[in-house]
Length: 338
Image (cartoon, rainbow, N blue to C red):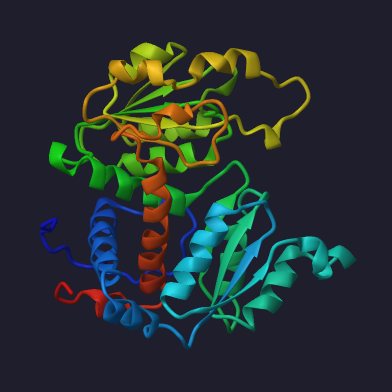
């Protein structure tokens, strides 16, 4: 069983989860410890029952007006683990927004029914606007950003950090490693959020490998430079993955296509195939936020370096840990091993 050096909880309570920029190294180290501890409760019936007893008095709303299966079920399952009663809205057309009500007014109404709102929206920046609005009301419920347009996906980045830390623990962790991010880096919100979290680690280098039309945006480039993060951008896929300790594959985000934006033909050069596996380091971690298309060969699934299925399970437990922190019961799971 993994031995962990105890890490103190953050000095300030977790209020909202809006952006990966709000988290520092101390928070990430604590979240790793908390999540790993929580997972041990799942090893016994008594532990499972205990977790479900922590928050049965709380209610959450899953407000997912952008298509989602994995993130939705991951958060829904995390609520169930803790005994939280979760309701849902999956289509804004079924609410009063169809009658012309603003999304802000809708969510302020919903906040009177629940203790937490978990949001996934195609509108960039909406989660932060709603959080600021509710903070100025008598019922300032926490907001969790479960994906906001092509902008941010902070909980995906947190589970990615957890997966990287766990996968590289025999190699000294994330510090000093090279992470190669591949694909639609212009519109991939998971890339944007993870890159910002990686600035909290020492000596990390990011290689962004993509077609010219899918390079990272200037705002992320500026943020990484301001943080002193070493990074390079390249169109050469194979040399990039050879240098990497972790390869993070992504799909083309064509739901955000605008006229004149293409690149599918060029993107074929950025597919990770089984024939490329000998080029990777023996300890290299292969990741993908899913869903995948042709950019990640299914023949790689059985390779021990493939961690994308583990990412999905890790995601639920990381979200369980986040919910315990939002409701201030994280101290109740810092117990001896079951």
